[in-house]
Each structure stands twice: as structure tokens, then as C-alpha cells.
Length: 218
Ligand code: DX5
Ligand code: ZN
Image: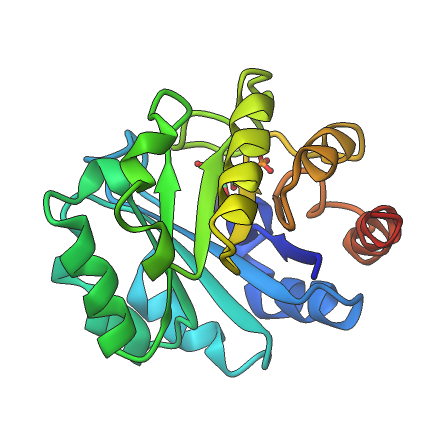
């Protein structure tokens, strides 16, 4: 199943509720929420109070991407404020297996994200325990960056591994996805598409529909 997850990092924060409702009504299935702590990544974005306050604006899945060191400290709180999927970075967890368990115990779906330089081997012993893998297609920390081409091969390899092992794990991609690069990642085997700057701004509803139209061809 192909899913669009617009990243609100590129939305107009003074109209955040309305921005979310626009992409919701246009058909986006998830809302991608980037949490940055100024440690794991250089930037600081938003946290629980913002997520709680927009939770009532939509029934769509809150796809929360934690770019945070030692995320195990916050899992329950993020579920409480409305996260449906929590994705943690393999690089940020000393005890990744335990964090995945913690997310499931808290009642959310669990994702693991890999930075562009991190090998797929980081997933060897947890792939059968996660609901989604997030392949970062830029170095995390900022919206509006360019897609890193070496990530295409990584997506392909991961799709093969998932199929070989007979698993039902989603592959999400995040960073530099636009109407051109989306073809590359879909062909490579991604099925959850994050897009920030290519969706928000003028005509976000139209842009969501264009993405969904492209995705329906795969
Ligand atoms: C980057 C974030 C992304 C970001 C994507 O660190 O994880 O979700 O918002 O933005 P675009 O689509 O503009 O590259
Ligand atoms: Zn993200």
C-alpha cells in the first residue's frame, strides 16, 4: 500500500491546524511530524505541546520521526500526545531492540530510521520486530535539502531483504522527495513517501493530489 506522509516542518506554523486539514482533505494518509532536539541533529523543531494541540485537527495517522538522542526517555509521552507511529534513529539508541519493544508496549507502531551513512546491517536483528524502516535520503536536520543518490541502492537492497525474509515491513523515505525523485524511490521499492517542501506552500492540496496520482501508477 502506498502512503503519502506530508512533513509539517515545511508548513506555516501559525496556521498549522489548517495546513494539516488541507493535506488531510486532499487525501494524504499520514502526517509526518519531525521532532529535533538540537543534539542528535543541529536544529530544534517542535515537541509534545504542539503535537497535542494539533491532534484534534485530524484523524489521520501521526507519523512521528524522532531525531532525538536517547529517545527511550520520551516514548510514552509521545504516545500520550497522539503519536500513532514512532520512528527512532538506530544511531541514537544504544539498546535499539529494547526501544522498539517500548514503543509497542506503549501501543504505537515502531519504525527505525537510518541515516544515509548507516548500513542496512544495523537492521539485521530487528527487522522482524519493526513495522517500518525509514531510509533517510538526506542527512537529517533540515527540510529543503537535495536527495542523495546513493540511497536508491539502499532502498532496493532493503526491499529485497524484506521480500526474501517474507516480512510485511513498510519502507519510508524522507528528504528531498519531489515529483521527480519520487519516481526513483517508488521504483526502488519505497511505499511510504515523506515530502515537506514539495507539498507545503502555495497549493498544498493540489500538490498532494499530484503525488497521490503518481503513486497510484506504481
Ligand atoms: C529532515 C526531516 C524531513 C524534512 C523533509 O531532517 O526528517 O522530514 O522535513 O523535508 P523535504 O521534503 O523538504 O526534504
Ligand atoms: Zn522526517
